[in-house]
Image 1 (tube, one colour):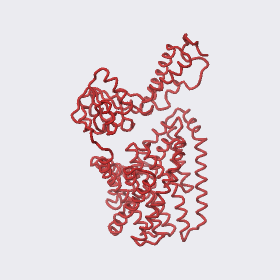
Image 2 (cartoon, rainbow, N blue to C red; image 1 turned 180 degrees about the horizontal axis):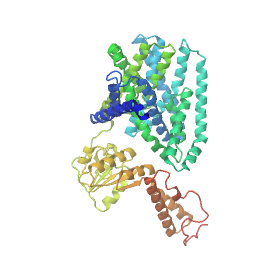
Image 3 (tube, rainbow, N blue to C red; image 1 turned 90 degrees about the vertical axis):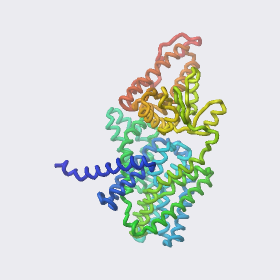
Length: 593
């Protein structure tokens, strides 16, 4: 009987998943990106077209958990020291961009659309809050989160998340049914909640996960990770901040934890599913009746707001020393509105600052801007890519043949190539950085231009004839993508991959590569060995130590691949011991004691 009651719910879930699995691959095949596919699928099944879902707002509120978990994972990549180093960008670049954009958008609302000043301010302030979900998804897909430009984008997004509190306080002050003094109380409550979260993250989270790890039950650790994410999000929502901000802070506080990789792998599946659901819900929220009735105003407001905000973003980027192309790319990413605009507009509607028609128009403009952003990004990528790096003097990969194909000619690939050339192996090399290719030519290396993540480039580079393919690029996501593509399309070639860290090694081994090696592991082994030599140990003892530690590391990695990141801990040497962990041998300087 209980199962029969779940029938309608399961039916709606099947509809959602069916729409997503059809639309997203189709849009990706057309080169339009997955985000636009989710938007289109949501609009199709939403109340404006097929009407299979009549309350998209309820789904949108639930699906915001995808943004929450996404920000938590991003926080895991940023140590508190690194975040502190960004404070100048957060409150400098972020404040400047937001202030200029709000001012220009408010002016445009008054001058172009004859809106009352207060209404124009609310409309502009909401549109300033860019979509965290769209921008962070774009940065992650491009592997740019850790880049300088990626850090600037994160700083601006963090400031916009913080801005929602004073904006809601301003709405309360402007509201004829609200009370102005509530703004200061709300600000104090928000600051108190943020301090409480920081205190809990600093002194309670790591011991909490250590306690859960002792249970040696992965599902318990997963439940603990979800509890931390949702608890932090709930705390921030309770004190008036965004849930995404709470999850991000919790992630930052756990970024230095030894359980970080395990937590990230546990959260990953939930994050991906809920992010897709969020984009579906945004597509459902598009009210085509409003679009049909108000399309001249909507189209005009969309064009004006996007262009005005773009001017503010570009001007701020150049004023803070940004080059032309990075400034243009940031402009394209941030020119749209975002999900937090709905929060501000809803609060303004409830407070009587704007009416229902204005709320519908402003919200629809934001949704339309989010929907066209993937198209604008695709067009911008094609235009800006041509001017980004000149290909003068660089040959594209075409008709290459060789026993070995090396993908990536950075510091790692250059060294690996030396051993192959030393024994006369026939080698082809591709690299996607024209400047690096020109530098290589100065030293006599023939390197061709090509992106190893593209199947057509791999064919042109001779991957089908290669016996061995070395994946030496310095982007972990690109390495994984290339390894997967090569294994599927060229199964006869041995795949040798460079991994970023232990977690990446585990992923590559599970994916079935023939060989992987962490980019720093051998240099770290040699550094430790030299330390023993400097302490006076003879070479035989140093060799024994190297073999022992290598064996322990390999054993631990094998256990982790079969289990999880916490497996094999007993094979680690974690504390000093009174005697050497390898038998002492004679040395010219005497055995250290």
